[in-house]
Image 1 (cartoon, rainbow, N blue to C red):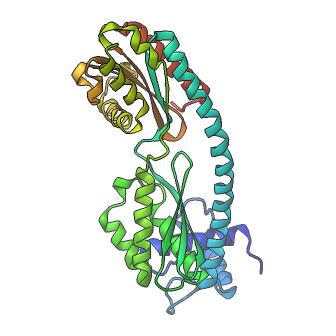
Image 2: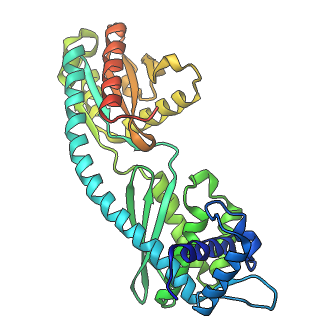
Image 3: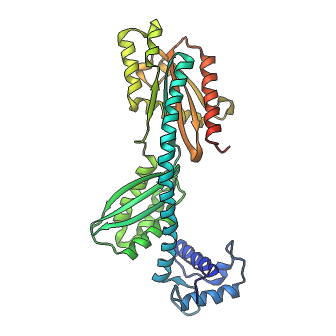
Length: 349
């Protein structure tokens, strides 16, 4: 007997259902699943073949089936082969896109400064309300496992996880299956204590290691260490007498060079924009004087606008100038560049 497409689909359905319920799976349950347009009798015949081939077991007479080690192996090898190709394709794509986007955003910051005669800052895009795509565990040596974590936006994070006892390859495959079944597609908020407890229970003696993997997932989802800031037009500050005082100008220019303060502004702007229901705002925010979360900007006005690329990736453009800036011109310039970025990256509406 050969492992054809129908047998593969039935085996995958049995494994997925068993992972969710922990109960043996019968033909009636499988027949109700979408995508399997065959009768319960045909499913029973295929399940008998799968049992004879060693992919599933019948723990008790008249009960449903559960996956065997051979069944797990077939399913996980198939799944991980697809994921490995996806990771490889992603890495090539991410590197290429990152190079192109870096050059583009530097040009955007320069254009903003030249068009407005103010200082400009542009951030690289970051994932907002990020979700996990999948996890791949790989054995490195007797004392460590590498966790490759892929999150939305095709961001890839690697984390070395220490293990107290050596784990064999079959166990690694089963833990991969456990993690991906329960966590794929979830945001940090959705990975709650109850779910973590359930996963740890099913991991058995490897619960501590799985806890470390889940911590790494949380870290990857919320990570922002790849934030890049592109600035231009800092010397434009000296055009305006109210800002050209040596101390004031020095503080403003220092802020333009410090990433951490801009991160705070970006976080606040994105949060405020998410809270607004008025779509006519177009993601543009104006902070006048003390309204700015950045103390050194108390004598300035800061106008920010978000841009959004694919997969929920958001970045921010900012114009910094005197309180008497030409707000209408600044808003129009930011709006135009928003539209051009949206068009260039074909943002999904």
